[in-house]
Length: 132
Image 1 (spheres, helix red, strand yellow):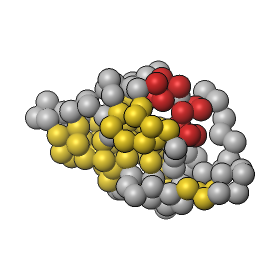
Image 2 (image 1 turned 60 degrees about the vertical axis):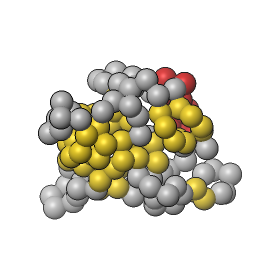
Image 3 (image 1 turned 120 degrees about the horizontal axis):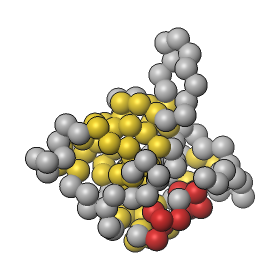
């Protein structure tokens, strides 16, 4: 996995809800854990663009509801700064279901994704509609 060029502001924490941005059958996801965070007593783990999180499916197909899945965050509302100085923010929080290897579960992504996700996960970028 490639490292990111910028330090992403982590705008999502445990309990945040995401829109599922692919055609896997899930609609609304809730973050229940963050992969790779260090533990500290009473600190709530947070995640940002291109983080892998553990989510529970809250709305979607009956076969997908109540499942625990891995999700890569592709958009966040909290703005973050790129190394060239511009600040980026999206209008919603969105994620894409991935497997243990980081490959997408769905076959298409409906909205735009961040360039940081495309650099780190090229397979997600290959099925995305647009990269911002």
